[in-house]
Length: 152
Image 1 (spheres, rainbow, N blue to C red):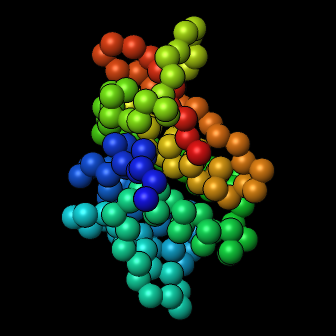
Image 2: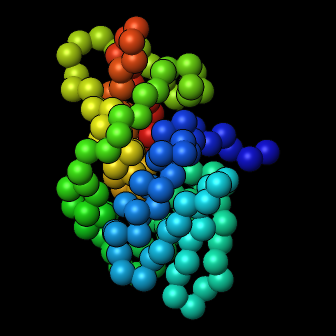
């Protein structure tokens, strides 16, 4: 059974797919990610083009390629943290598996909806690229509440 693409609600919208492709293509020379109607294609030097319909599969392949090229997680973070604001991505807690969300109490800083895509990419790639990486939690907000999304 394939694992559920919990990142899909953020990465797979018609607006986010080309943004994801542009951001990932800018992380390292030689990596080319393009948005398609159903997902992304990934081109790497000397390898056949691969097609991904799942955001998780895309993140797995890109992170493995970056590690194989000696790109550090901190270099990826630096490249993505400087991304300009994008059109707001609105999410609700119901868009994600219940096991990935948790109610939030207190005043933790909410990820702005105009920085949600690069913030998710930093968290998800960082975990995949660091052998000792631990899950992270993004603080998100919808019209009703603030809550956390577990990223691993």
